[in-house]
Image (cartoon, rainbow, N blue to C red; front, side, top):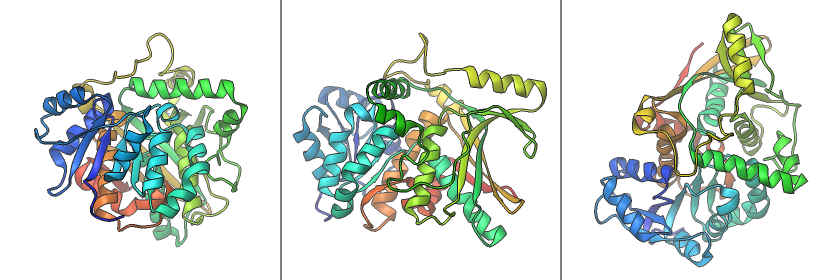
Length: 389
């Protein structure tokens, strides 16, 4: 890719709930010299959002619409990288993936839709590899803290044991935050697709759905309630595990299986000790935060105060030959939106500023940019990655 493109980064979907947060973050923090623009279907709405978030009045606006592929293609050709928050991706995402793969344009999104991701891998990985486009799905709370957290604890395991650990557990110790309507819409679209296509169901239940042609050791299901003595807590299923675990297994695959062909990984939520912890675990297991009449609608999400008061703390335990090493990843805002908007923006900046053009293809965050991305997230985005022993 030459340096003659009009922009370094375009935020596609900048007038939506999450896209607005991403644009606001770039308006406040984009390094000098970064040329960025706001994109979406409605020029007037984009201009209104530009003014409301305090972006410079000369911040460029690009009109692009997933229903008009020629506008998506023109957008992809005009920039080095695209941030897209326009989901559900299985409904609106493919034209942009196709355009970026063709144009050699880097791409980051917030996708947590594994069946669609596998379909995109099958259709566009080779073309992206050939064009040099680095397409990176899941650059928000799903799945950067988990994907990069496993990479981080495996680095600690190599230091402690002299070798990677074949077993890692991810355990959400604490989390405060709300889901938005976009997340609920993605889940609804996934369930609708599964009802119509048995192949989608197969992908949703396959832990190796994102590693075409490869499978490994049988994976822990992570959908039970249990007491884990070494952490002194009951644990319950974690709603984002279905996407995070698959991204972690793809990272191991893309990196050449440095954690071993028998590597296993699962995620759960910690709910505390004793009878109260057990009751909380059962409550978590039976809850459906994205369903029912009270489910948020697209465009809805947590308030500014809720975003700023949110946080998360995830523990990773790497085990080898009866020994363990622990690490944590913590974020200083609500996970799904306050922290996510910073993570996806920094992912795009990492591609543009920190990584020389490397092999194209469809990547995971950890497999492509773990070390430089972690450095960015700690310095700029309120995340901490810490070894705990």
